[in-house]
Length: 188
Length: 417
Image 1 (tube, rainbow over the protein chains, first blue to last red):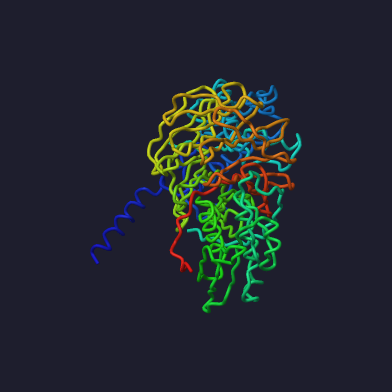
Image 2 (cartoon, rainbow over the protein chains, first blue to last red):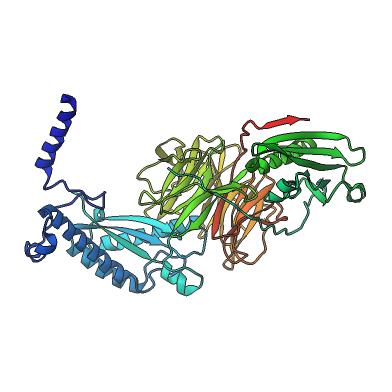
């Protein structure tokens, strides 16, 4: 009996001590960082927030903010052609839009981004994995030159595996030649 | 834990005849199997049909199929031998499948086997007899019992499939709502390596077919285009970084991979030579993708292809003398073969649509590939000279076939007669 009780006591003790900072998040890879949001937001949602701890509320706000930033960036990036066929160089319009993305990232310092590179379906799956990687790396390089620190960005390629639009023809192809962004909270 | 779901496949055999070219193909007769009518009509196809495909696509035979023993037809066909057999109920959900190879004139028995198998194993037994006929009359190991792995789009995910080489018995290997792609067999066919995006970015996975256990071979390394060595001990794959792609080599057990190519260009799509001493791959250092060969430590790099502007996806024939690859011309892909010095380029496919991802049967006699000629990407097999094109998938979208090695045969209850 003694052996069973001891670990339970220890766990309880740890929970009581660690509780405010040690919350589970849906996104298991990112531990929560104490947000800088003003307390006013907390008071406004009192009814909805009844029963939640302060840490839970802050975590939800951070997630809402993260989602908003991600949507903002991807909305900017969802317009227009970013890459010409078989190329990883940014079009003029792409560079324009990326400066807006850069501004957001420079302002929202608690977030990092994963840049995903995509291609249209022409060419082999293999060669398109490399092309997608080049596109993501080109976007990253542009943002670094713009002023976003390199350690806040990661790149990855989906090649032709995750098209935005199915089908053939330049209309579909041009929408698939893109970079998309995932915004994540910076771990500390 | 993933449980393989057995999916049926009605094979849509589209023969681009061509009987086996090469004047050394042997004419042979095949008679419809006799016996229990109920069992025969319940089979996915008549045994004679399975035998016909196995022997015809192997390139070693020109079969002539008849309702029953027909000396006249087979004499004019030039067949000295014929295959026949019967199927009888053995009780307990099993059958006795008798297969015989006999001489047309004398009716003397050359070889015979009686397989006592469950209903679900009848195709396997027939394939085994095809291989026995090939062994008896050619002295070579046939590929009738081998498998294909390929990628199938299922909803928003892509899953790895395995089937018999003729498309029957397809089952889903991977599960989960992720993209799984680019399968490569490990020697012995008990394991597959492939690319999975489940870890968040593309990673190389090794998967145990029997129990579904998986292992991330190089966690944290974004890799694709895996190719397992013929002896099963090593794996090549591609990593993209800093605007370049390069080929890496690692142990099949994981650990730290070593970099093989260092060029600023894209180096990718690696594939081993059958003796494991060399690697064929794609490089675009010349401005567009072309096929190159290097030795297994990355030295002695030399270009193979000089015809066409875009050559990719090379696969080395198990006989060692040719490679198959794809060439894009005017936006369309077709499959070609050539010698290892780039000479004797032969175009194998000429249809509309894109024909990609060639992979060789382990006896070097057949090639599987994907084609959009029917309107959607499907898997096809053909003889190595481009004849005998046969569609083996017909639902959904299926790509990136990989032909297994030789199958280790488990003990089957078969007695030589």
